[in-house]
Image (cartoon, rainbow, N blue to C red; front, side, top):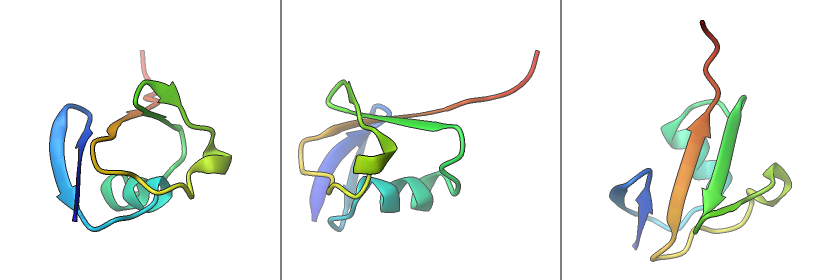
Length: 65
């Protein structure tokens, strides 16, 4: 098990990649940006494993007016 923070909430889960976590929590990766420990992670690097202690921020674009 690993423990990290996701958008300010402590999460305990089995080790997984950023991509797996985004698909599990958000569903789609369209319009999604991810930062780990304050640094934006390019989509090409979402295969990287989330590590215990990481701070993961996931932002989604919302259209509207």
